[in-house]
Image 1 (cartoon, rainbow, N blue to C red):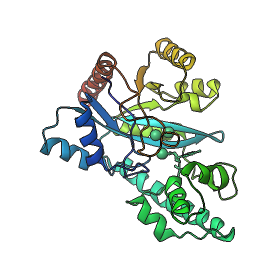
Image 2 (image 1 turned 180 degrees about the horizontal axis):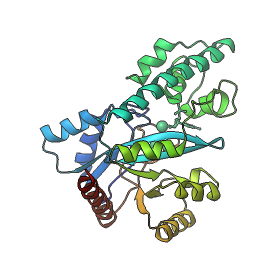
Image 3 (image 1 turned 90 degrees about the vertical axis):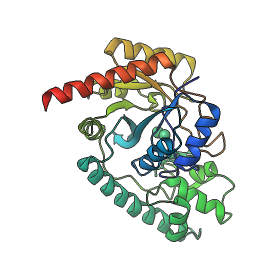
Image 4 (image 1 turned 45 degrees about the vertical axis):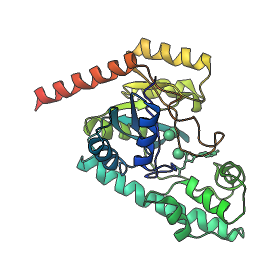
Length: 284
Ligand code: AMP
Ligand code: MN
Ligand code: MN
Ligand code: MN
């Protein structure tokens, strides 16, 4: 049984609420999981409360996946064990939310000019929260019968380089790492295989990343070996997760619980975090 350390809920672009996701985890008897919504902590309190109220016997890791960019490449940084009341983190996330809303407005305008009528209220309703991501725009295009799938919406309209794509706000990996560390969390490089550029991966290691997501649905056997070797060489934590979003297999990455880390690897992560907390306590 694996600890799935990469999942999304309705707080970002997943289809299950934190409660529904935890219900599923409990049914499947997963030993533990992390919720890692894009650029938001909005699902974490609900998750924590649901676990406490139902005395669920699973290890819950409060997490986040920060979407950053470096030399035009998307770099996603996972944060684990973050203090989700940290003021600096919350302030920055609020700015990102606003920038995402502006970006959605621009993308919707482009679509409307192209004759595809969707509107912001519809996209907001589909987002089920105030964090808007491209999949919500894709869902609106589907709802209005312009496309058959989320994937088709990305391929035709809103994927990078497609006509309705609008660039993201500026957010660098080093800022994401610092933000996570300052909130007491561990910063991990998500799905390095998707970056398709290992010299960039080495650059991010040099920025002070503490772990690499080695186990991931789109990593092949060779990549798993390569990134495990990176971890050994640079003394980084090995993590893994399914990137579960709750929609179709082809569009939602992995099946929940099908990727992650063993109990032994999870123990390494817990130990590392405990040492950090001790060090921090000594400093203050
Ligand atoms: P955003 O953060 O608003 O730029 O949206 C990015 C999200 O869109 C990612 O987290 C994925 O969940 C989803 N996504 C990105 N590319 C694709 C694609 N080609 N097909 C389906 N979903 C995608
Ligand atoms: Mn996503
Ligand atoms: Mn990602
Ligand atoms: Mn993800």
